[in-house]
Image (cartoon, rainbow, N blue to C red; front, side, top):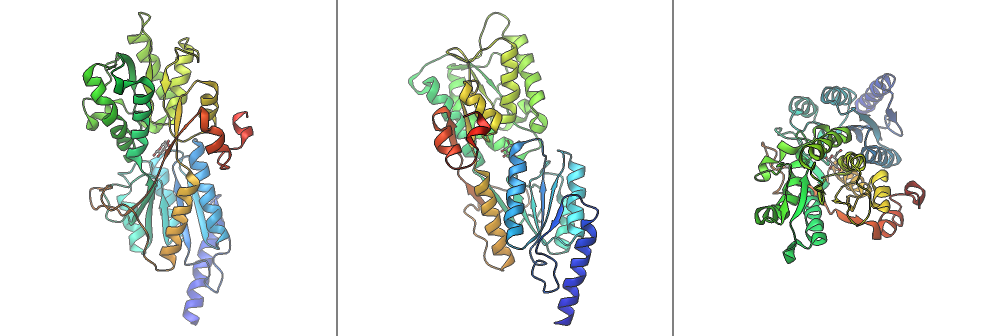
Length: 372
Ligand code: BGC
């Protein structure tokens, strides 16, 4: 018993000591001599503050865990892999027993996860899979293939492709080549759209039309950067649409790319209205929901990040209590070393018509956030 108390106190002292050098470390309820918080010592590693969703993801989970008496260290890595690795190392040396990681580059974390395993920490891949490591225990995410399917089907329905309509000019984009999710998003959409490209109902004037799902990275936008998507769209418009040709539809895998694409279209003179292209998205970021209300974006795939946080919170409770961790998919996410037991949540489409009922009424966004 005495040994247990001393160990608890030593870990608490270590956690407090490290807290002094980390701006974002918060120790609430944890680290007392009774050992209450030391079991639930969680490191959360998020990719960047530059995208709204990750701020919400991190802060919501942090709050829930703190309210439950856990010790939590939340870090953001400015989309820099090295920074993320050293943040995770700090969390491990700070005594983290559970790591929740939304990887920047899903293939570079093997060595640091080895260190995590050495101190028996449980690793949950958050939203993005971590590849090439045995030491990923669980994966919690949305059904990423379905996100793409919803985007593809939206385009299919809006353009009447099933009824044989066309040809329409399409410009497809894909996400960051280092993000494991990006290929699932693309495959989901391309499995719906590619047959129409083959039939000539969809035409890709830029030629940036991947021959198959595996060729997606050729049109990937590094770091999911809006400015890079904008520059790419500028290039496509000036090189392939010079003769008065118009874009009818843009497959954008997420909202940050859509923002750049919309800015490019705007500077090329496209104005929301009858001839404005259909543009897809994902995340329901405030700026994009405003764009949807203004007619500058057709839809977004909404992933309620609160539900993802709740699921990870449940997983953490189960891990902490030594219970079986509930998963609902044990076949889809092979990381090259193992099939990672996963919990997949369901994404849904939001258009102008259901901004109020889905996003505002559920409290995901405030009406004032989107000018309503
Ligand atoms: C996430 C998306 C997000 C993108 C860029 C993906 O891994 O699943 O929700 O838009 O990263 O941050």
